[in-house]
Length: 107
Ligand code: SF4
Ligand code: F3S
Image (tube, protein in one colour):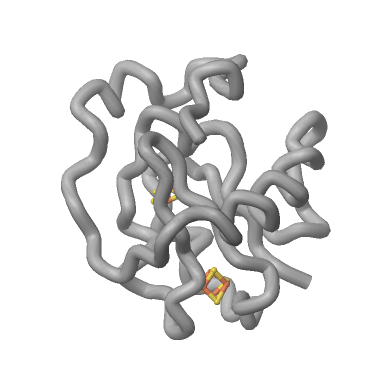
């Protein structure tokens, strides 16, 4: 199993999650983070840390978010690892909770 970053991270990118991951499996893109499923040890620590509630266990994904399993796996191969928290994106509060953000994803 793995944990998965889902749509509500897009354009928020709060990065609280990276501080608690014991195996550094978060990878950073311009406006989204993903989890490398080959590194995640299912420790569950990141899930409650996300202010946007964007992290779920693979088996517990909300309806309509299943495609983020493959997206995390694919983008983790392309993006660099992030291990330290940074400021969220400038309009994070405005975008938090907005539906249909997948079209905003910058690869
Ligand atoms: Fe890292 Fe644990 Fe979250 Fe997996 S569940 S991404 S190992 S903090
Ligand atoms: Fe994204 Fe939540 Fe981490 S918004 S960057 S998954 S803390």
